[in-house]
Image 1 (tube, rainbow, N blue to C red):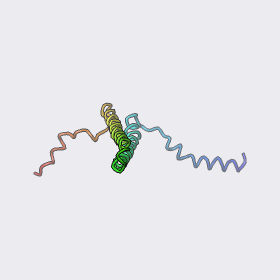
Image 2 (spheres, rainbow, N blue to C red; image 1 turned 45 degrees about the horizontal axis):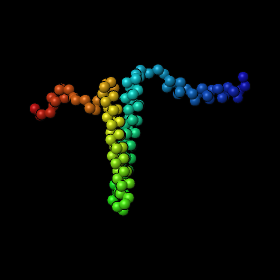
Image 3 (cartoon, rainbow, N blue to C red; image 1 turned 45 degrees about the vertical axis):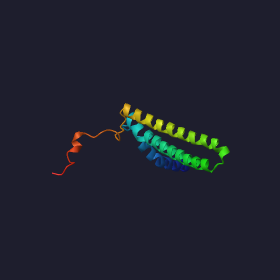
Image 4 (tube, rainbow, N blue to C red; image 1 turned 60 degrees about the vertical axis):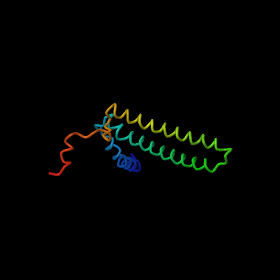
Length: 124
């Protein structure tokens, strides 16, 4: 082998060592995959869609009041579609939470605490 190729092979091996190290098998299950990776992205997408729908709703309500009386029916349609969008987005959000709670995927935000958490409410 040429010295030039040895240098390239060694540099490639040194650069790919972290990739090989991080490729070690982990004990991740489908539960941890869904709860730690997919659900946060879904929640972020829902927050962004709700923010966008709210901005569009406010924009079209303001536009509705600034339109002449002849064109208010068009503005009324946009406001109705914005409210329908709110309903669809919130329904999707509810569906995600129903699936999380139905399959016990670790959504601990809506679960009640145990009775042991009530012991330190009142001072002694």
